[in-house]
Image (tube, rainbow, N blue to C red):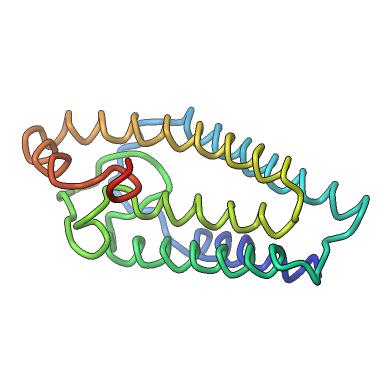
Length: 179
C-alpha cells in the first residue's frame, strides 16, 4: 500500500527528472529551491514515520481520494510544463528569447505548475489519513511556494515590465477567483 500512496510523488519526481534544463538560462534564486527541497524532505519523512508506526489505512476513503488528488496534481503540473515548452525550468531565471506565456492554464492563472505541485503533495498527505501530516505539509509547501512566486514575479516584472504587469492584471496568481 505504501507504493500506491507514493505513486503520485514518484510520478512527479520522474516528470521533473526527465526534463532537461534549458541552455542559456540565467538563474535568479536559490533560496526558494532550498526551501522546497526541505519541504519535500519533510513531506516524505512525516508520512513514512506514520507508515512505519501504524501503516497506511488502505481501506479508508481519504487514502484513495488522496491518491486521486495527487495524480490530478501531477497531470496539472505536466500540462503546465508542456505549455511552457522550452521555457520551463525548475530554476527561477530568464532564458534566451524568453516571453510571457498566456495560453492553456496560463490564460487564467500565472502559476499552474506550482498549483499542480501543491495539489500533488496535498493529495499525498491526505492519503496518509493523518491530519498533522496534511497540516504540516500544507504549511511548508504554501510558505515555500509563496516565497518562490514572489521572487519569480519580481524577476519577471523587472525583465518584461508592463507586459508582465498587464498579464498579472488579467490573471489570478494561483487559484481562480480566490488568489
